[in-house]
Length: 365
Image (tube, rainbow, N blue to C red):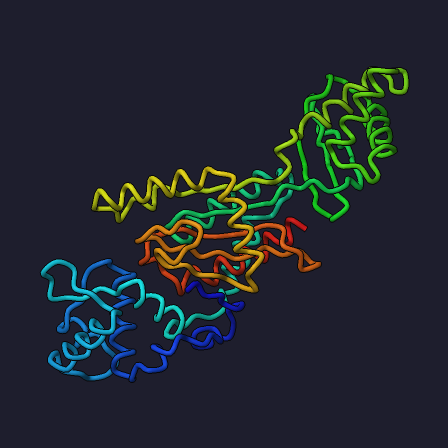
């Protein structure tokens, strides 16, 4: 029951999506009532009554007429009455119908696009730091938990470079054959001459072509164990430090989640708290990373999972919005997402996730 949302644009109703038959079957009054209840639910989380609706609806309807419409929507499984309240809340099916057929959104404003691109500019930062910043930014913009996944990079190396930073430090720049660039800062002996950095880079680049980082590390270790005379002592130290700064598991393959505490904001029942705790545990597993990539690989645009629909978590009361990050060659290089309560602001977050995925796609490839 999940839905793929094409790239938002032009404020088109439902962003060009075709809703389920139930959406087309709603008359104008029912659609207006459902839309208003969902929008109030997203804003306040409180049940909405007929008197409130009569004041807020763009069309003039009496409270009695609204109650009849609400009763029909409840019978159809789109609304429910919590406890003994006279008001109504949307069910997960009602939220799905709203997202698929009634939600309206457009492109992000230019100033927000610039702010996102500026926040994720990778100048002078490692890939890991940039992805962590992206996850934190998504959490802040959505008031939910932000997720950023970069698949492990195990492709061949194209080029390695050392740049002196002064004060006993140097920047290692690693360029993969697929265009991905990663940076690390290493410590070098004080007063290290620039020639040692150049010699270390030349030595590594002569052996890097066509090899992965792990293969290059093994080759260099074997050569240095056999004959350290190919490099002077300082250059050898730099070369070893430059390779050691990447562990076998650190080049991508990271699922970074920020803002988990926001998922607890609306939790009022013990069973919901237990579900959130299970969700946190699943976010820590390698299986979750693989499933996220599968979801991204099956998506052309943003995908929305509401409550138990999610094949990833199956947790009632939680929604997930996820989009693939594609590079210039249209290859998936990661996934971007937001996890939040079902009353998450879909109209606000879908364009944010979509645009952030495109920015991250450019950064990763």
